[in-house]
Image (cartoon, rainbow, N blue to C red):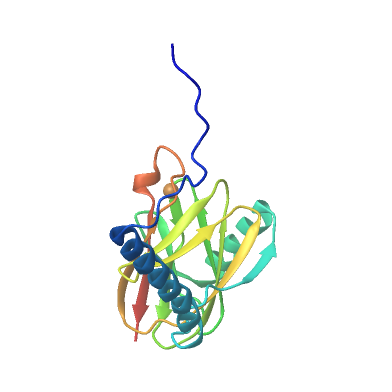
Length: 176
Ligand SMILES: [Cu+2]
């Protein structure tokens, strides 16, 4: 038969050497990461764009279709290639399982890229630049983009959106 004993009055033990090191390192690292947020924003100008509008999926699809009809210059595998006027508005629609249309932009010009989805949540990921944005239905997300180099850039979807998710890739072509 066991007997009940009262708990020790001082139940904690003093910090060991390793615990102290671990705590110090993690506090310093937390402060470094915190100050990086400020540096990133102020010095590197890497703020996430915050310009967003409410829009219905049908309205955004209409805007995209009008945009494609107006500026289409070709097509690749049935997907239109669109060359918008330099510095203008650009519409990029994400839908299961496609980025629509293919864009042809001019280096050094600033575009207003409107991003939205026709169905579920998608993720815009520009490769190999590693730019990532959420793409949501009913929201028009505006990104001001100035291509700094020529070439072909691929857009992959990095938000699981269904069975064809892995096939969902698009393209931005940047020319002089
Ligand atoms: Cu996806």
